Length: 382
Image (cartoon, rainbow, N blue to C red; front, top):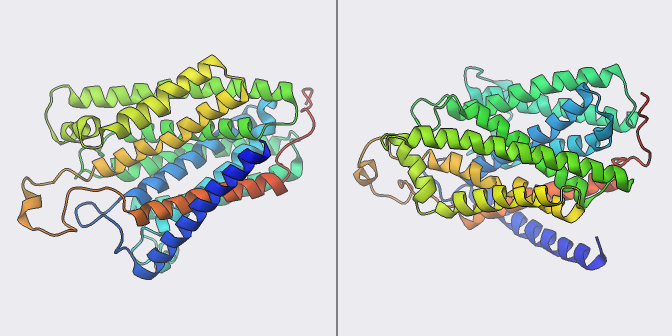
């Protein structure tokens, strides 16, 4: 990256961080008065952001666990990338959801007085356990320097089981809510896992392309493999979405049909068709099939997938709340906080921008000061 691009990237990051800090200070001093959700739509951008960042974390780390478990030496150099990104994005997911709490300073009570009959409490404990486990394996990886051992293979198998359980539990937070037919779907946890794998591995692809490994030939091979994996996952996730949408909408009846119709043809139709489908799926497919080993093309394709998937998370969270449980409920009482409409406020976007800037800063510091990149090719004889 030349000096002009570095300067431009720094200016953009600085703008996001300053704007984000303003939003955080407003949240700290004024509570949730500046948010646009209310009694009928109590979850918004920050909840979607939590699911988004946690998905990135699970997908990135899952790639590392598979490399460990199956001893894939060709991809071993990117394990530290994947684990570092996982730790950062998981911590960021926990950070942004803390701003959504009415009394965020009481968040420690989920650990001192947990109610494990609630999936929210269970997932919070799983989140902390997964963060600690991934962080410890990352430290071990940085100390070992790509040395092969049975310990890492065991860590990989444990990580695979942990990641599937953790990601499925995150999807079950919504899927078990029987009062919301759109969320109450057996396919929900599977879509959660699929989306996590897609976005996390796409993020690793973008990172490897933008911050390449030291050996050029090895880097091209790595980009090609990761590009093919991302292409396969894009098609897999699109297949799951087609199954969900086509079956649910076949007869044109029911609450779930109304929700999906709103996603596809409602006021924010472009979130699905343009952001998710065009920019986050079709365009990356073209890029990754065209030049899978080209740094710029593959990096852009991976970044588009990872960034644009926030549209899916927003549609999942918000669309499930905007349909009244009872007809004409929105007309029973009239108040600004009693509406089945939602679009994130500037304060909500500012806090989200702060979280993104936080992710970028931590990755930059980790990449700069930690021994992430190996200068030697792995020993294929091991």
